[in-house]
Amino acid sequence: MNLQVSVRGEESRLPDEVRAELLAIIREALRNALTHAGAEGVSAHAEILPEKVVAVVQDDGTGLDPGRSWRSGGLASMRERTELLEGEFRMSSHPSAGTRIHISVPLGGR
Image (cartoon, rainbow, N blue to C red; front, side, top):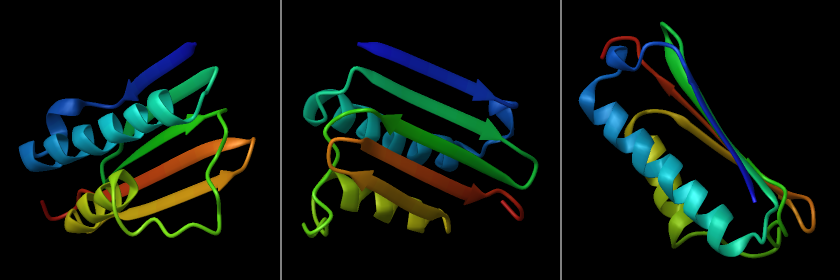
């Protein structure tokens, strides 16, 4: 398996609670990709900007069934954690084409 991880920006700019929650979200997304996707490649990239932090975890695995409800478990937990940070959580997936998790969390006013 090929795993790529990168962080751009100054991590010390992140408030402790934001850093901890983002780490938990990214860790869960990576765990899901490694455990369930059968992926050959997984990437996790984060960029810390003055106004927000953006993180993307993507795999080339089996993808998810778009007809299934994901209201519980790891995906629901990632969405809930993101929303608690007043952020935006997006997931896109296609069977046999992998899954992409995109998280954007505002930093202004923190």
